[in-house]
Amino acid sequence: ANIITTPGMVVAVVCALGLLSVNPAWLHQGWMHAKLAFVLALLAYHGFCYKLMGQLQRGQCDWSAKQLRALNELPTLLLLIVVMLVVFKNQFPTGAATWLIVALVLFMAASIQFYARWRRLRAERLAAELPGGAAG
Image (cartoon, rainbow, N blue to C red; front, side):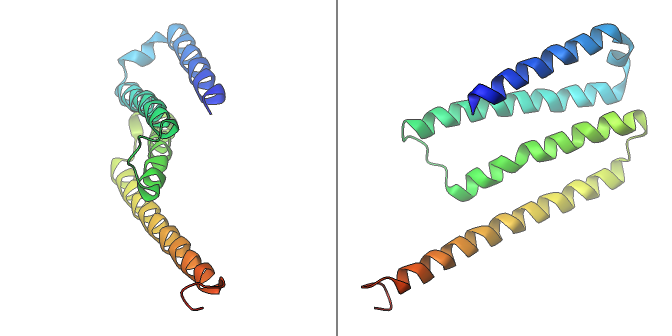
C-alpha cells in the first residue's frame, strides 16, 4: 500500500505547492485556508494509518474490523469537503454541505453496521452447515 499512497501523496503536495507558487493570491482567500486545513488533516490521517499499519504487521493492533472500516471512511469525508471547497470557493453552501456530510456519515455508519451484521450472520450460517457445527 505504501508503494502507491506515499509517492502519490508526495506528488500531490509538490503539485499543490507549484500551483500556490503560480497563484499566491489564493493564500489570502478563506476557502483556501479551510481547504489547506482539511488537506493537513488528510496528511495526519496518512501518518496515523502508516503507524497503524505497522501495528497490524506486528500483531499489536487492538482495533476491531468495524473500527477499521469506520476509519477507512474518514478520507472520503475529508476529500468531499476539499472538493466542495475548490468548486464553490467563497460561495461554499455551508448549510447544504453540513446536511450532506451528516447524511453521508449516517449512511456510512448504517452501512458499516449492516455489513458487520451480514458477516456475522453468514459466519453463523456457515458454521451451522458444517459437520459437527452448531446445528449438527
